[in-house]
Amino acid sequence: DHGGAACKGSLAETRRCEHDCTQAVDCAFSQWSDWSSCTSGDSEAPQTYRSRTVEVAAINGGKPCAGIFQETASCTRPPDPTLPCQFEAWSRWSACSSSCGGGLHLRKRSIQDPAQQGGELCSGKLEEMEKCNTFRCGGPAIPCRLSEWGDWSACEDGAANRQRERRVLQESTDPKEACSGALREVAECSRAVDCEVSLWSEWDECDRSCGGGQRFRHRQITRGASGDGRRCPANLAETEGCHVAPCGLQDCKLSDWSPWTPCSSSCGAGAQSRARHVRQAPRHGGEGCRARLNETRTCEDTPCDVADCIWGAWSDWSTCTSACGGGQRTRERHILQAPEVGGRPCEPVDKEQIEACNLRSCDESQCVDGLWAEWRGWG
Figure 1: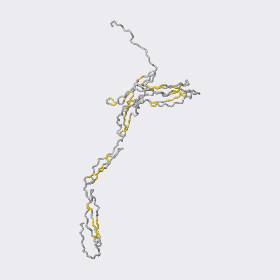
Figure 2: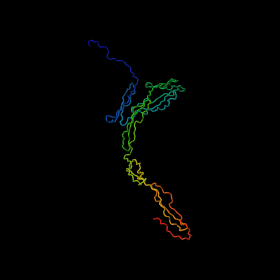
Figure 3: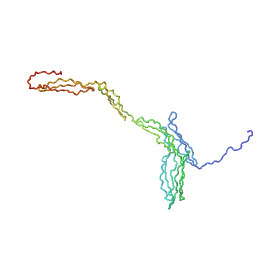
């Protein structure tokens, strides 16, 4: 405007840039997202979801992505664990196709456990072939000899890979049998990350109220293992029996105790008892009663009076058994009071006494008037 100089030059530029269109790039998935919540507002969602996307698209003939983009699982049952693909062990090498001059033999393997729930896919050969019996027919040939593998390089400063090498110790004397095999190997640096799992959930409700039911609890993998880390446990869900008692089960029941009976003794040590009975018998495998039906205990109402033993008085002497020439007469006594309630026992004294009487000779002509004996006590 206002007489200024006009613009001179292009408004856009283009230039050539180099791009490698020969190197194959395989497709790669992103990591799985977290499982969606099983709670939606105030209600429980029946399903939980997770997804992943294509992080690197396949180009230049690279392998396309193989797998699902979204997974769903029941909220009442935890998702199955993520398991990587596992190869079987290699088979033995087959017999060489030629006894000399160079032949081939092979070995095979197959997939033992396919990847599950988005686990890492198997990557590697299912069949290998190598030369064998390469020495010349009709004369010994010096085969190629390779050294042992060297040590792996250190995984330092966050290195993603490590490597090791070997070298050719002896070239083959046969030009047609050149050395074959890798002289350098590269492997991922092993970073040990232990698997982590959540705590067990609470046991859910038993599915039966009697007769044997089941209840369930689960836990989840919160971080997968890598490198030489501790592997994840196989048991992420547990089931146990509950309410195993048969339906209609009835346990034994006892009545209340009866009152204590009166004491068996009015004084001193006695005994009294009480009883109960089976009020309800067990049914359908119910638990039987395991308790006493009778009980006894000591009782002592009042202390008893102590009574010592007392001997009675001697009776009168009996009539002499002979009027002359010597006879005998007796007297006795009895226990007037037996000992009671721990009283002093009777002394060990005579209960009956005997003595001689009328000792004069019967030949004496002396007249002796008769005498009455003393009266005995009243009976």
